[in-house]
Length: 400
Image (cartoon, rainbow, N blue to C red):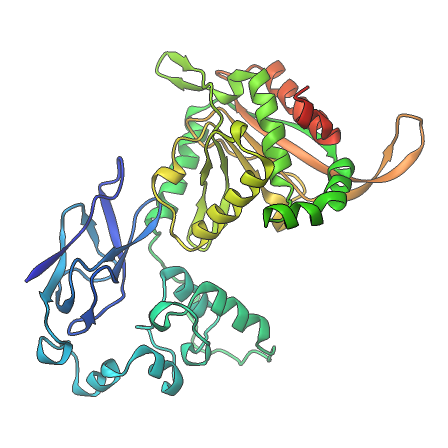
């Protein structure tokens, strides 16, 4: 027998929760094929089979907590599915388990709780009361992906909701490890840092005109769309270089000034908010920034980020504008001392330098900072530098 063991989960991570078994007892697996998903306080990761064989025993049920090195189950190496241990279930269910996943999707008549889906996808399916049999699957081994569900929902006709009876007035659901750590870190930031927020507004007209003029050429040359985030990251780096306290952190009774710029970009996922980090962005082109953001964002939503990709940030940018937020006070991503909040772009009547009034595309900016290390002058001035760079993008090219 070969043991299925909880692998090393990353620095300072010692425990995980068994999120979902992708294989059942008695089911054949190939070497390096995913067999179980684990959820830590940062990411969801897959444990792959070390050998070809059959799942002989599942020792830990879904929802249970496990430590690094714990035995999750056992594999019968080199065995054939039908010649080894079979699932301990009723005979009627045995037939259903023997049907390949692709065929189940074609003949099943009701949603299956055992469908091969990630926790995030399963939540969307359950929330919308969907039948997995009617959702075309494009993932590996017939697995339903998040995009499959989203495409199905987009094409699904709207029907009147049927009356529901005997629905519970309340429902208790255990917080995921990711949600628990989010709650703990946000409260920790409020309790530890002397957190204040300074506001400003930026006329996005110049950036929007620049994008319109060069977006086609940019995409043709680099194979990626030119978004807003690369402008904000470049503007932030310029400001952080001039006001290093906003890029620093407190360690005991010392201030640690960072001479590098690792910018975290907050991404909302079905599991919660995660902050993948773009490292050394001052050395990256705008095309490299845009490409990296797309890649990190996609893998964040799929739960495929590594621990290293979510650590080591020196400053964070969060965009509430994608959800329609007009104004907010972002909470620090400790131990960082600064975070920038972007918001919706709205046309507003503005008095111009010559006294005329124009409808301009305006965005409110909010920078929260740790007043223990960042003075008000530095916080306000650094936000003004970002505003100036965005309203005159040539500054980003000339570094002035």
